[in-house]
Image 1 (cartoon, rainbow, N blue to C red):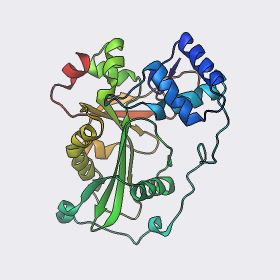
Image 2 (image 1 turned 45 degrees about the vertical axis):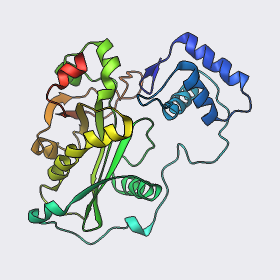
Image 3 (image 1 turned 60 degrees about the vertical axis):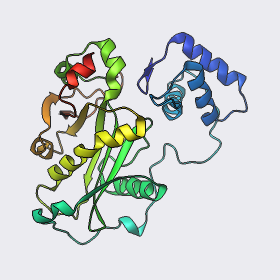
Length: 285
């Protein structure tokens, strides 16, 4: 059984259920920390992977594999992001001349106010909306003269996709061992009132130049490859091609974990961008 990038054995599932039964007063957050310690589930920087564990346990609960206690707080988990402020209201059309691209600033989200702003923009204007993401991630806000023009995020890579895995040439054990060295460009939004040709590819290029260092600063390791998935019914991936990403093919519509039991997802084109000249060697070694 695989959840949140980790395979859980039947004995581990039994031990998790025993731990829940032994801790009737513990909430879900405390249980996830205890399970991480029990299973020795840590990030590379030594911290517990408690958010990934919490999501994994919730999915096990939904799949009927275990019974979690009811949530203690009405924290909105599982509900659409409803925050709505005037800060994200539509603005007048803005055209940024190419000569002013040097003024663009790509800033990582670093505090709760920026986080709420990023979430709100994505919920209002991205066709996929906002959803909380467990595990390692970075979000960026792109500004032009203090006005937000675009938003991006990077997260953990998908577990498997044949075109990417064939492109890398790694074995299944090496994929399990080194998957964390790939990150996924999960969201990219240029706000609808921004009317500027070639802006998307410029933003991608600017972000690529800093994401490796930002990721290492946060998580103490450097990714060597970026992947992204572009829904073919909506977009052609032109901006990724213009930013020198490599097209690998299309997905089969089975989701991040390769689960063929769930409903088929929209077909997406697969693009990658190497962050290291010897990315194959690092992923396969």
